[in-house]
Image (tube, one colour):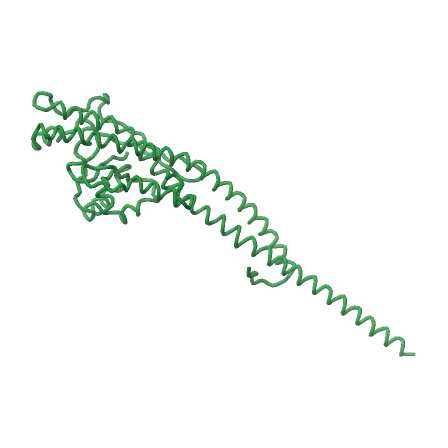
Length: 102
Length: 216
């Protein structure tokens, strides 16, 4: 049985607690990476604010080829980088060779 | 294209021919796999993109409600209201095999039986904006999970497509031409050997005849 978590700055994520998701506050990429390594086995899905996700991209890449956890960037309150959409384009590019969805 | 470093023997030739047949069949199968993976991937990635747009919009909306709530109530109160969540969501992960790519399927269960049991506070001292925000967030959770599923599946499939494409290309442009060239090289070498053997026998026969004629 796995859990679902939300990671990011406190303001962006604590609303998710009421829906039954675990709130995992992390303020910098380094914090997030450390936390992620500790908890990766317990969670099936971790939503990460785009700001934090773009700060810990190398760490996220480690989990890209594994079935769990699915690390999904979501927009936060501030500092969105559009990394979520960029990831989709990247996947298309990887599979097709060019971004054909533009 | 370089030929393989093998002895030009009949046995080697038979082996290579067998390998060529296997390589061709493998190539065809992998090509089919790649095409089918690609088809499914395109379906999924379109869904993924639409979902993401929807989710990003909804989260922004939820954040707006949250900001409103924060404007009306003080931070400590909000914090206290949300501190002890009613719900606890856990998820069962099963794997689905799509063209030998294992993609996850999430099945969520809530701690309490009533899914609408989302407000972890009494309504007396909180603003309705907070209710709105909480409702909004819990409404987008199914969407978020669907997004997580498709996005993960897309990542895994993209990796598999890339791998398969490499294999197809390696077979098509390296292995198969190499086998073909080597087979041609060996069969030519064998024919050449045969011809020189014939020539040698004729020569020997000539010499023998010569000997026989000049004998008496």
